Amino acid sequence: MFLLPMIVAAVAAPRDTDDLALAYQRLEQAVARMGPEDPRCERVNQLADGAAASFLSGRLGDVVAQLDDAACAAGLDRELLGLSAEVNLDRLKVVGAAPHQWPAIEVRDDRGHARCGAWAARIEIAAQVIVDMPLDLPGGRYTVYAWFRPEDEAVALSSFVHGRRELALPIADLSLRLGSLAVLPSMAEPLNVLKDRLALVQGSHRSSAAARWVLDPFPMLAAIEKEVEALENGRDPYRHLTGDLWLTLPGPNGRIPCRLLVPSCSHDGAALPMIVALHGAGGNEHMMLDGHGAGALKRLAEQLGVVVLSPATPYLVTSEAVTHLFKALVDRIPIDPNRVYVLGHSLGAVAALRQLTGSGRVAGAVAIAGGGALPERQTTAPVRFYGAEIDAIIPARTIRAAAQMSKRNGWPAEYREVPDTGHVLIVSAVLDESVRWLLTLRRHSAPEP
Image (cartoon, rainbow, N blue to C red):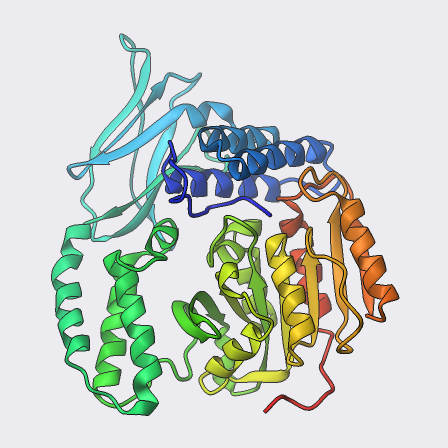
């Protein structure tokens, strides 16, 4: 089980999901600046696990504060967290108790480019720091950052979508075009993907709340318009695609929301390995790519030439789900059928091991802070278990025992324990070595039909 920029619609949340997302990203960014031998590691991990426990028990009002406590323990300047940023009627206001110095405020787009900014002014009577500035920005998703000194890391205060009303007419037009589109049976699947992508931008898809904190609807809508045009001309818009894409894919029990990352080297035509990355309880399909390690898996995928597919874990209820996902992609992306891997955290580790035992498609698996003992060996695929030494949610001894039992049952299983690490932050601690280990593996049996 685990925390993170998650869907909280099932519980009455006193904080916005964007607040949870930003708080977690602040924590991961602060942790990334710490070394593995930093004496603060144990305390930071304990605080992060405390936030996870609060989330899982429904105490959502505590989660953001606990995440920020963990980030401050990792070196984040607490005074910056006293600032509050709000956008109303095309104006940005930043207010908060006056710190020891005036902060700089900057608004950045989703590419990280600065679009506008100001130095705060202190209002002595109210003992507040305040910025009140107009937002002359094109439509898009933006994040407000603050810092005290030029050498400091900027801290994200809030995120917002500007100009959302401009989306209404293009969405209505594309909906009409898709509704009147008659396609050949071979194009039925791309049409299903397009309808779900448009519903996500429109806000009517079940995954819309989860996507709000990470996807900019403006470039996504521009991409959808090109995809509709391709389909109107009889072409599959998702063949030979590259880049980062949200889509749905057919699974054994309905369509599965996914994030798909295809590295730029796929243009070369060579078959690429694929990792199916599975998040833990309470997360969503964005967690493995945007949450853990502040986007570490995305950077690794591009660097090492790996396709990453991150589905919403709860949809992988059967052991054949990875086979379904592979078949949905193999005609569109050059995937090596003998180098398909699964990697999961907590509940995602349970799902990863289910895929390992139920599908001859998987060449290797990594189970991080989760999973149980594998039954009698069914394939030769290796599996690596990771336990977190100070895990307060799933103790390391539980993971160690599962690895030992799996080995006794004939699996090529190994166990590694990460010191001074808890249930939440172990993912960023082991992502790099996990991915590199998986890429050394290859399935030798014949592909499934």
